Every structure is written in structure tokens, then in C-alpha cells.
Amino acid sequence: MINSLLEYQNVDTTLRDIEVALSKSEERKKAKSAQNFLNGANETLAKLDQRAEELIAKYNGAIKLYGQLLEETKEYDGIGDMNDDQLSYVKKKAQSLTEEVNNLLSAIDVLSKEIESVLKEFAQLRADIKKAKAQYAEFRPKYEELKASKEGEMTSIKAKLKKLESKIDPEILEKYKQKRKDKIFPVLNEAQEMSKHAYCRCGTELPGTSYISLKGGNIVECENCHRLLYLK
Ligand SMILES: [Zn+2]
View 1 (cartoon, rainbow, N blue to C red):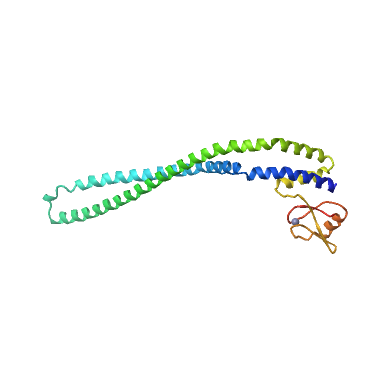
View 2 (view 1 turned 90 degrees about the vertical axis):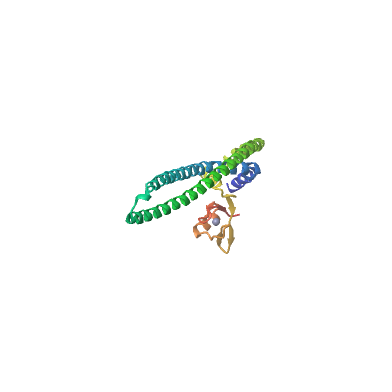
């Protein structure tokens, strides 16, 4: 049984090599990174939209207030007819009004600059999205092509694997397939035996029960790295 599984794993290794080569291919990496960027870009765009809306609302509010303050300054046009008390009051009022207007102007200036920078971010993001779309459009078909070129080879390996499956205990085969999915590879490994103890590839010493089971020709699992183990 162990030999059958090792044989199965040998054939499976050739399939896995192709899968790894595909997944590490420049074509897939370029298509994938563009896709990831585009997925995130929508969220960034929505955030920028919201920020722009907030800034414009603040800006409009400030401009409106500025207009009201300008109106207010007109109330002091009849200054020539005032007595000293009225003049001193008006002077104070005018001073605080001037201060308010100046503060408002610098706040408006800050808001303008923020809006400008948000617009720049928009432009940059739009350019990046365009670039990512072009990259995706170029590399996705290239990757599909590469994948298609390996299709025949992969199908024949899979057929070979299917044939070998009948010689393997279904429960062990199921375990093997799950571990393969979990990216544990090679799934089945030789345990190391040293003075009546067995060790996994990861260095973990296996419990006595596992050692006995290994000696009995069974397959055991390492509790640390979850590889399957056998003894020669
Ligand atoms: Zn281990």
C-alpha cells in the first residue's frame, strides 16, 4: 500500500510541478496583481469620492459664511453719524469681524489645497486603473494560453493518477488529497528511525504509539506539521 501511494505521489509530483510553474509564471503574476489592484481600486475610489464630497461641502459652507460676513461689514457704512461710545463699539466689532474674515480666508485656502490634492489623487488613481486594466487585458489571455498549452499533459497525468487510485486505501487517499490541497507536499515522507524512536522531517519526535504503528507498516501523521509518514 505504501509503495502504491509513493508511486501515486511520484506521478502527482509531475502534475504539481506543472501547477507550481503555472502559478509562478510571469503571465499569472502580472494578471493577478492587476486584478488585485483593480479589486482594491473601487474601494479607494469610493473613499476618495466621499472625501471630495466632504471637502466641497465644507468649502461651500465657508464661502457662504464669507458672503454673510461681507454683508455684515456693510452695516458699518454710516460711521460718520456716530458718537464716541458708538464708535468705540463699532471699532471693536469691526476688528473682530476682520479677524473672522481673515481666519475664514485661510480656512478656505487650506480647503482649496486639500481639494486640489484629492483631485490629484483621483487623476493618479484613474491613470493606475487604466494601466492595471491594460496589464490585465494583456496577461490574462497569455496566462490562459499558457494554461491551455499544458492542458493535454495535465489530463494525461490525471488519468494516470486515477488508475493508481484503486490500489490505495480510500481513507488514506482522501487524507492525501486534503493535505495536497492544504499545500503540504510531499504529503508522504519517510520517517527517521533512531534508537527505537521515530522522527518526522520537521524534527518532531513521534509518540510511542505512532512508532509502533510505523513499525507495523502503517502510515501515521505528524501532529506538528501534519505530513504523512512511513518507515522503510
Ligand atoms: Zn512533522
